Length: 516
Image 1 (cartoon, rainbow, N blue to C red):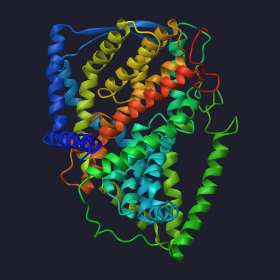
Image 2 (cartoon, rainbow, N blue to C red):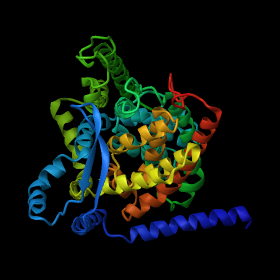
Image 3 (tube, rainbow, N blue to C red):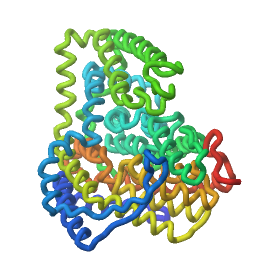
Image 4 (tube, helix red, strand yellow):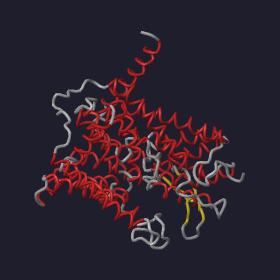
């Protein structure tokens, strides 16, 4: 065995150790119960010690940033106990991932139940060379982020199906898709739903220094397009060379051979294709003309528009409509009862996710209520600010800090709303543009999504893993996704360093430096 093989063997053994230790942990639902208990005790201790942080927040009324002091809230106090007792149901029903999953699954269950998705996948298998499967799955995962969180619910499980069609391990397909969707969250060839939100927060933060400064939604577009290629290449390499080789053998005997579409299916595909064209044309007319119905009625833009607000519903229709027309054309759907039954079946498949999400929602709500998340984030941010780095060292540290904070607060816009008022003005004083600060944040935010158990869709991914490995747990998912996270983080930082040294614009009219 040569040195390279020894090195690889050591790396694989390390991942096996991570998986073994992780799987020794309790059931994922029990882990969230334990974390909730730890949060309660920690909040009481921090409140007793008088732990607090002070940071700047944007005041909409005065249009200025004002100082705000946040102290740890004792979850064992009478008011907190009353809050916890009365918020259990609303914590669950209001959990971010719950509504998204249920809405999307309504459309996906029809598209899947009629056989539409299966037919599409078989066509995909027929036209995709085996050596490109990993790249295609990762790339589609990245592109799915145009539609917000749809990829988590739709593409991740489909990744397993695509891999099985090529007699490749389904968990490798899950990992490749999850890496694209979550690890590539802030890379895309198109402008997604998050870009306007980030730009708005960055503009508010920048205007504390320069009242005329505006950060546009396309400010990181050039960098994100190149990042799409980078993440696709890295994701493909990690899937083929690191993740799949360490997976145990999978029994494909129960997997049927993928057959080409039949006559009825071809007719269904034709009907589905026509319905998609009509639907897209209608959506175009409702969104792109300046005074279209689904644009912001006050400004005429897509920012803050009903279209972006209802993107999950519109994506649900994008699956429901062609799925329904495919079923009618293929003779699968006979009446309305068939359609409702498909929806019922799709929802019933979320039972394990429902149990996990119930306890995850309680922990998340208690953690936020205690203010421990804000205290951890602000304290970490202030520490980095006090170090006094400038230029690349400062940015690299900021990326690493964001990657770390992401493990504790997984909602990207919430973190940026907290961090932008601190870092954007500070970096502007050091000559760095708000666009540069924003793109640095997005790199760190994406890289650790796939190993952050507090990320809303992480528990859903655990459930997908358990479909193909009943013994899989949080440790299995973390061990599988850790190589992606590390390679993405290092690769993205290297890309940023090269971009910085070359002095390239991050997007249209988006320079690297401020005041130059």
